[in-house]
Amino acid sequence: MDFDIKKIRSDFPILSHTVYGKPLIYFDNAATTQKPECVINIISEFYKNYNSNVHRGVHLLSAKCTEANENARKTIQKFINANSSKEIIFTHGTTDSINLIATSFGDKFINKDDEIIVSELEHHSNIVPWQLLCERKQAKIKVLPFNEKGELIVDKLKNLISKKTKLITLNQVSNSLGTINPIKKIIEIAHSNNIPVMIDGAQAIQHQKVDVKKLDCDFYVFSGHKIYAPTGTGVLYGKEKWLEQMPPYQGGGDMIDVVTFKKTTYNELPFKFEAGTPNYIGNIALGKALDYVSSIGISNIAKHEKELLEYGTQKLSEIENLIIYGNAKNKTSVISFLINGIHPYDTGMVLDKLGVAVRTGNHCTQPVMDHYKIPGTVRASFAFYNTIEEIDVLYEGLLKVVKMFN
Ligand code: PLP
Picture 1 (cartoon, helix red, strand yellow):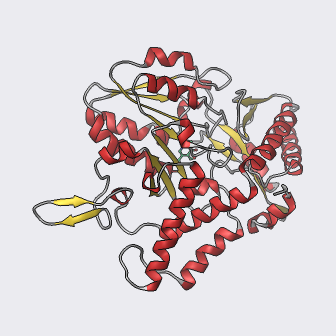
Picture 2 (cartoon, helix red, strand yellow):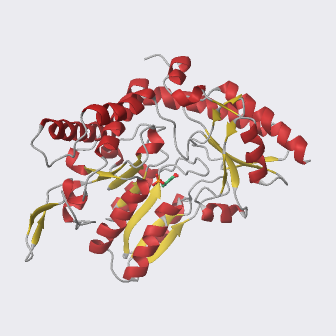
Picture 3 (cartoon, protein in one colour):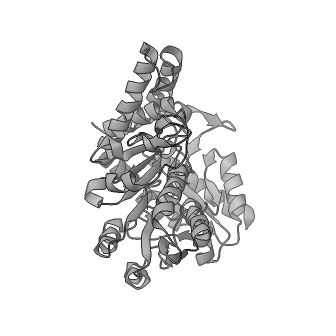
């Protein structure tokens, strides 16, 4: 398909809105993405016509929702090239997926004095669940650092790995700097030491082709809402060999086989990890969002976003005293910056009044901010529906900010 930006923008109802009488320019895509009409429509279509709880009913509506929910699972399996739909667990998002792994894998495989390696570039969601686990198990976290450009120092990994290392967990793309991490290389190093790897794909899946088989990662997690699907949806991919060995995370309906007061047995994969009524209409909409992304073409998306990143980086670099944090060679369409002497919140507030939505703060990556000794940044994150003209408005807005505060 041709990359028709006008048509693409018309697929997203919110993009034609105005704020404070100005056209909305949405540059907060790393926090959450906007939703195309087809995703919004499928939610109302299912609630209007087919809504009924999945897996339990013999009637037509339940069968329809069950089938659509399982078809969405197959769509996800295909999208990330997993071996089997048994390896696709529906969750509420990246955070939920990581907590599931930290609890279930952690209970089974992490013991006293064991070590888990995380990167310094992680979102709090890929730090805190491991800290909670390490507190419970008296295990230890080791940190793989990054350099001034925001690139992981992979050479240091070999020194961090020991006989006690039981897991390496890191993101594919940093949410606050946009760095694309060399996860294939890290996975190879880990596997040559018999260590499994969990990849947080929250900021990667929407920007580049993800093939879990090629990557050979043991776990891969992401959130639906960052890839044009509804909030409250998410995915945990896990190799079957791990998922089979891991105990259930939560108990309840659907995850059981037989329940007696004497002993309960558990359902097979993937249902063993899906206790309670799932967000089935959300899951169905996630499948729709992935179909939509596939129809645009992930390589077309990557190409357009690369142009936005290059143009944005060049324009913003023209502004005196503006410092970009995160200058990795491989980056997604994220620009984190500060203008010397101007608080990020002030910059964000002025841009907001001009219709430009950016995020300010530490972006749930306090260790990254601590590394640079700054409290936070302004972050403009672009999606494939953004344009060069919108970046020009950001640039003009920043010139106004400089004028106002100097
Ligand atoms: N990991 C990364 C890299 C993220 O960017 C985010 C959200 O910004 C998360 C984890 C947490 O995602 P969620 O809040 O959807 O669970």
